[in-house]
Length: 176
Image 1 (cartoon, helix red, strand yellow):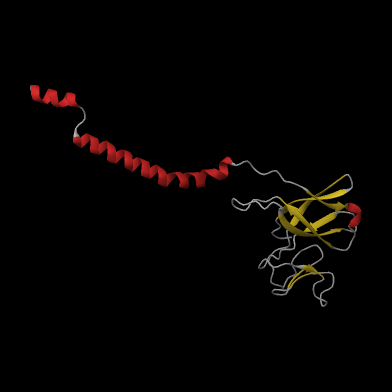
Image 2 (cartoon, helix red, strand yellow):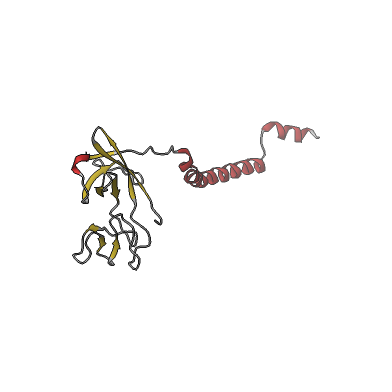
């Protein structure tokens, strides 16, 4: 090595190495900025703990008999990043079976998501009726063959504490 080359090396980094490091660093930074949201999206559900089933008080058990009663209640539910202060309003059709077991059914039709009503059509007594496409369910929420719904109505988890009826999360039913 000549004396001139040694002097140049003492001065520091060459222009070529500087550009290589700068472009490599900038490319790495931009790649990480682009990949971070994708990785976060993929990993986020794994890091969130499972939500415990929250039960909501809907009234005294004595209020319910063998006739269906519509019950409205609010639950805390996060919709994306928005959580309404008053909660999300839900509805359930609740009754006691002749053997005393409590049934709580979701009013959402399994055909297209319309709202079903108990005895909503005078032609069909003791049935749930969906006015959108004439969907019908029997008194246990099971879809009647020949009508549009392909699955029974979903049920709410139920439990009784201190004489009060509590409703939990919806349990999907596929076929009965």
